[in-house]
Image (tube, rainbow, N blue to C red; front, side, top):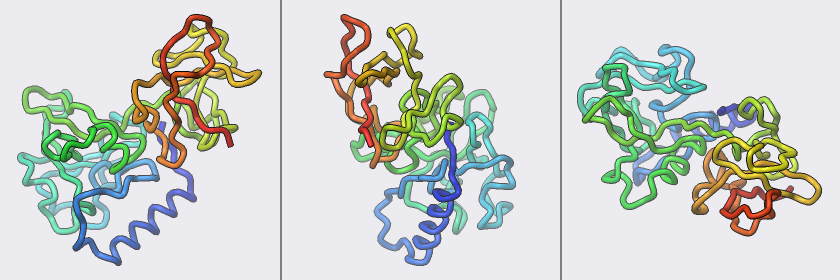
Length: 255
């Protein structure tokens, strides 16, 4: 679950205003990485209704009707389209140089604009890391579905264990926010065995306590749903609660 504090929201607004004042003539195509629950661009920003989207421009001028997708906790702003050229077609529609694609979305039967993580648009970058670094820590790279025209796009992911947090309410149901770690760490506390943990996590010990830690294959896996300055470390030498357990887990840094 992606939560937004007033402080972070204010910071995002200030940074957006600063970027607009400075202009973007030298933009090399990278994004700033959202920090307030959504994309730094209009597409992918949070919403409750379509009227929340593209509020800084005349939405009626877009090449398709604006939409607020409800397939994610905080909504996802986009608009209908026919081709890639319909995305970023109106002045002021796009705030960054992030590439966008027009693709069918799941079973909606409609094509919409999304922030692209197609291989051709990434210049060799890892797609998951690209979405986290350039859009938001809570975004990953997924297929839009919708048949043979589907494309890979940056979209909010289900965070679960390992998500940064400040309170229990910011974690998925059944998880606790462990505030003794930098950035907080959503986990199931006081586990005794791996069977106590949600899928994709293992029970590890930390002194006299224990918690379920997110599993990982590479360091980049531990940046999901966490800002870069509080990213966890992918460690193979964690102390597991259950004898015989092997593998690597995302271990957060202690405060």
